[in-house]
Length: 449
Ligand SMILES: Nc1ncnc2c1ncn2[C@@H]1O[C@H](COP(=O)(O)OP(=O)(O)O)[C@@H](O)[C@H]1O
Ligand SMILES: [Mg+2]
Image (tube, rainbow, N blue to C red; front, side, top):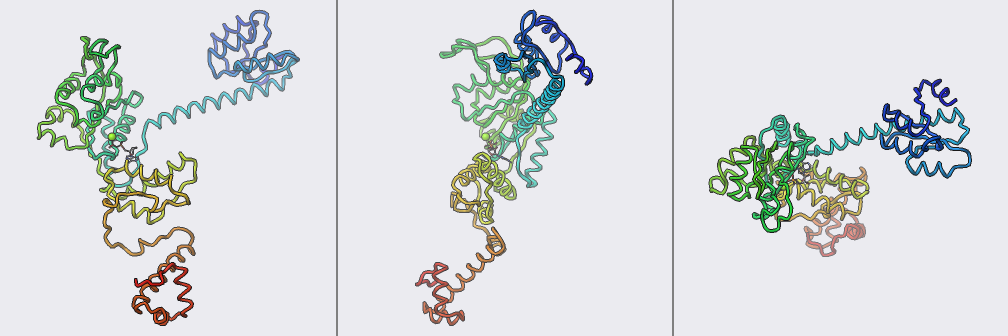
């Protein structure tokens, strides 16, 4: 009866008499939906359910159960059944349930595809910036990603060297492989070699177990050597050999390990100068700088500052679960006139802190806590640029009007030698009106400008 109902709707039905037969058909052909009675001549529906879930955890299973044994149905659903039908089964109800199970399965696989897609995209970091220097750098990264050459990223701390290294990896054919970073400045010299090349058990005191190095972990991926200029001389020689031969031995080991790794290095100091000072091997320098890329400091691309600031404001607000704050014009001005000695990293930290401190709808200069010494003296710009245009038209007008009134009154009082009566005459307003305006605008009674 069930077979007839399903076939009438165009479904292909495979029948099984008991658990054993069901397991065999599951193995032979994976169905889209499994429909099973909980009671079977041999084995039971729970066994069929387990077999189905083993074959595919997302496979929908509908169980049928005699009227009055709801308990069994509940147990089956706890074991992963999608739904249950009480016997005698109503064919209409059965068809409805099968259709729904299939729709759910489609959604599930679409969702899984989306999730994979999102994960793939997460591998590619978002790089913000529209300045032409940054655009050029991004283009160079794209070009470098198409080849397997060694790339040297040069730039001040916080300019985005690691970000670009990750982007390079994600864009390259090695994208699905690992991205392994090692900061040569952050690891003590004595441990650096073991970290890079790994060691065998007993290679030195404390080596209680074999450990693979970062070179090995980066197999078929990218190895990012951060602050490569800090690499001690003896290790420079060993690194050069590893790069040239793509082989090395673990510490205390004799077996030669062959690796397929792409190298990206970064430095925040002039490596060329270090070579001149004999602190860095020239041959290694040439090896690393096959494709040199310089990331300009943030102060040299001021047009990126507002974009980055807005990006970090949005992200921080999202993380905190609060509405996005706007940036007042004066805030943007202040951010743009700051030198950013710590580059994008400093901007990111400043914005995150400011968002946490801000209580209203807008981020204002007072929320930022910038080092006064690094604020550039801005050349006298277009005076209109300094007017705060936030809020509605009447709010902006009121702000401007109040500022003009305040300045005009302060100047009149100064010009009148502090005599408010004369100042009122000069301004052609009544003495009382002047008095109340001064109070409203918070002008000190003794103001002399
Ligand atoms: N163009 C950019 N767009 C978005 N975020 C950036 C950009 N440049 C840098 N960052 C962010 O700034 C921080 C510092 O970047 P990082 O790559 O660690 O700098 P570096 O390695 O040069 O010191 C990171 O959080 C990074 O994501
Ligand atoms: Mg870094």
